[in-house]
Amino acid sequence: MNMVVRTDDGAVSLLVDEIGDVLDVDEATYERPPENLDPAARELIRGVYKLKGRLLLVLDAERAADLSAGESPGRWLVPGEGQVNGR
Picture (cartoon, one colour):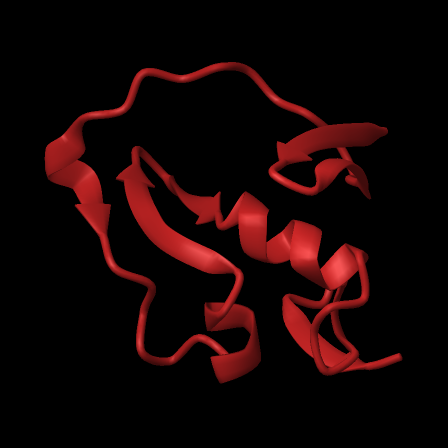
C-alpha cells in the first residue's frame, strides 16, 4: 500500500506494509522513543504509545518524507527488520 504524506515541498508516497485502524490513544501512555532503539531508527520515530499487549510507534512523517525524497545521507528503514541500513 502507499501512504501519501503532504509536505511544504509537495506530496510524497511512502510504501507501507499495511494501514491499520484509526485509534484514540490516552496521552498518558505516550513516551519518548526508547534508548535501546537503533539511533538511525530513532530519527524516524517521534514517540511510542503503550497499548494493551503492543506498542504503537509514532512515525515522524516529515522526516520519512525527507528520506524518500533523497534529502538525507542515504539511509533507509528496511521493512520487517526495524533497523536502518545503507541503500
